[in-house]
Image 1 (cartoon, helix red, strand yellow):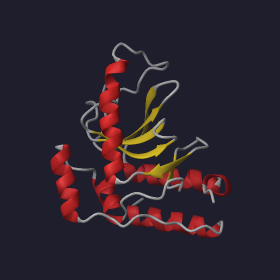
Image 2 (cartoon, rainbow, N blue to C red):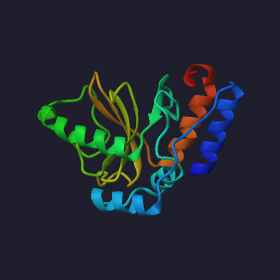
Image 3 (spheres, rainbow, N blue to C red):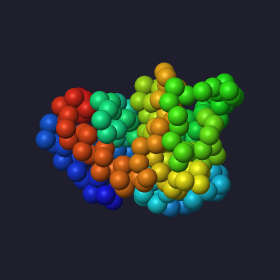
Image 4 (spheres, one colour):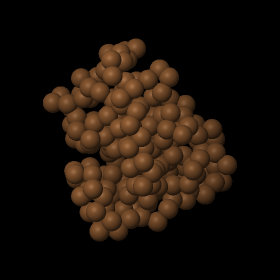
Length: 183
């Protein structure tokens, strides 16, 4: 599913529960080019397109949901995304020697921070993050979607790309619009 189709479908879901779907104004190509220069990698095309369309959403406004999870995620602005990324980098030192309760998917690199991990959505002040992975393991794909969950601290593989994630997210929100789209 492409970005425009996803956002149009989400807008329709909001309208069906008498809510307004509002996002911030998008970033210019030059701002996105500058961000890529700062990051040291090219953004996955759907993520770049998403931030070009909207630079995040309002806090407490559902833009994403994980399949089979009853939880909504806010869409981060690029600036907020970079702050969460920096926070992950600083917190990584506390995870040296930590063993996850479940074996990590081999498509995800080891460790608690990789230069190519870029959060794009969050819940609960970052206790739950959705991450676009620009540095997967040899078994993964650039642009795959990961989820960080605090307590227990885990890094999970969600799906191989953002387009598939948009489909999964829309399906989940469609199942529970009254609960996931809050007033």
